[in-house]
Image (tube, rainbow, N blue to C red; front, side, top):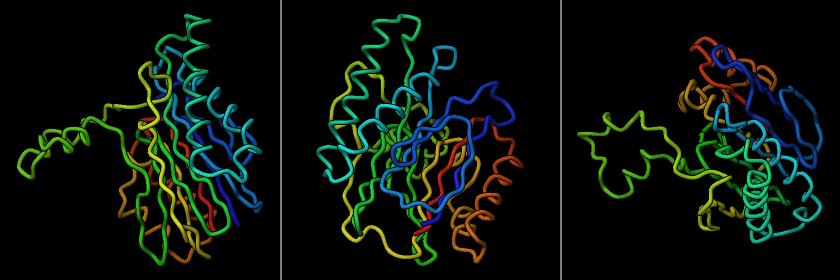
Length: 250
């Protein structure tokens, strides 16, 4: 496997509230490139601004990393338990340190075991897979737009009215968080040779359309150059948010 990760503050925000995890290591504001086998990878996008969103993201990443051995041979149920544990710890820490009240984070990631794949997310950070030149979003955006769409309030005629409704409806650090809030899907034969996985925060998907991502990821360029092309698009579009993305080539 080949892995390239880029995490940056962007041109507008003053600090980077994103972080990410590769196997049992948590990273903050760092770019990496390696060839190690990937079993677990995730991104976290802290929300809350002055309410220490980056703290929520880093706590979550560290907890997930600490459960790596537990998850290594586990199934989807073990993964759900760990995500629930993360939410409980965020709430406990905020109770003990009121300065963190209101902090929260998204999560999106993959767990690979042989040729099986578990894609999981809470919030609007995303998981994509590019296979045979076709890009597919494996995650689900927990946004106000998708909620309105699910209850039939969004139609072809009024979709433009809601298109910019990116308010997230689920996140880690939520008081009434339930296990059903975790979007987790098991894909048998979800991993094939030459697949490319993209795990990213919304600072990527808001700046770079799916069509552009598909063009870049299906090109003949090596993984490093693909990552730099994505960054170039984000920056040329103003990089209005922090952005973090993990590229994994099988």
